[in-house]
Image (tube, rainbow, N blue to C red; front, side, top):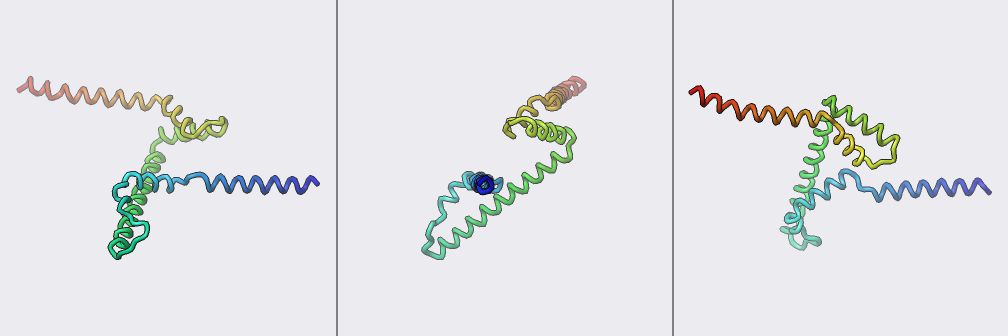
Length: 147
């Protein structure tokens, strides 16, 4: 009798996994939703049931426009990810994030926020940029005195 119960449990776990996968929003779905919301005015012109060739052509144009916008956002996110791979500080942050999320039951976003907040490099870079900005402002004044 125990064997059928175990197989029922396995089936239930598989069903749960399938339901979770279908309920979770993929990154592409999230990007698409974002693009559609950014272009609500354009989407408002989309005819649900096109009755004329003009409406059909307009629907196709809107669809192609949205597809291109989603593709561009996806490409941008890919390029941003590559920037993380090339930067040693960012790679170190990802490693810390992986360790933190593996050992603690913590949300991915919360873990990364904590790591970013604790990262001293950001503070150093901001301070450096502010110093450079102040130096740049002082240089023209010094040049004016020389004239």
